[in-house]
Image (cartoon, rainbow, N blue to C red; front, side, top):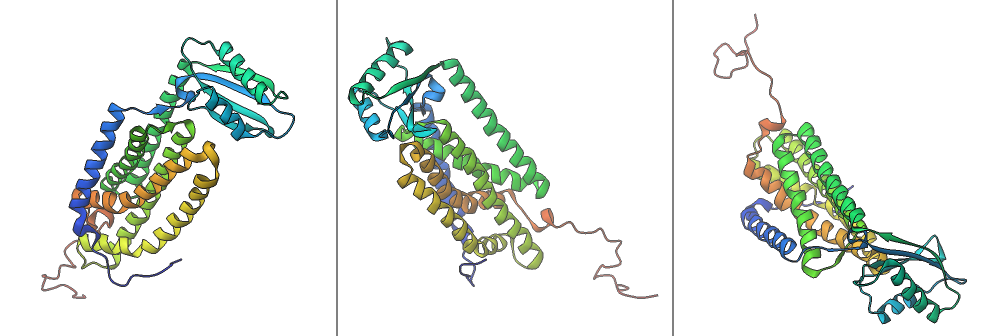
Length: 318
């Protein structure tokens, strides 16, 4: 399906060097903010208190958040859990307060706002569990990257695998750089969004690589740069349809999903925008710098010399 068709190829690779320099600078800046500012990790990673309360009527989540504002709590996650009357809260660790003392203070403040509230359960998430989640998250990220490299190396060729991984790491590090620079909360939902961006970005790279291979087969006289430009131009309509429809859904979560889905949708939005950019100007450009060519994708059969055009006896039949 095509939304529109561009008849003349757009010279994307003409500005590949300048745009790669911008990408490299953005990548370095993101790494710098990651090391200097660090990520603002949520309760799942740093440890804290998890409380579940119940109301007789559907709970007003915004009113619950206002109670925490009055208590001078920051970065508290409040969401409905199971039903509209049940509320789950994740509280960060407070210095000089135990988990039990923290729960008593919060419950007293909630009862002052609504006497019908009852405590269902309270749990303490220790830093050790948070470290384990962080380690498992990094292992999941590494497993995804290795799997993508193996898949692309088998389907295409090692140069395409390296190009796709460079583009994917570019997207992931830039997302993390945004969260480090603005100190947005990094939770398990955001980690899930980062992993989703990895798959989403490599899908776009595979589409472009497939079209490059098809163009190599159909247009033998085109140079490598002309082949890449034609492949990207021919996939623009599909890219706009796919990314546009996905971004509409993500935008609805960003605008109407509330605080629970806000940073998840924000990470996806950054990933989708930079995923389009990296698939064209990072993955394809890196492949060009690595020297992709027709022979990498199309294996020619060895000849015995009978098809040599310089052979005076070529084509002779006995």
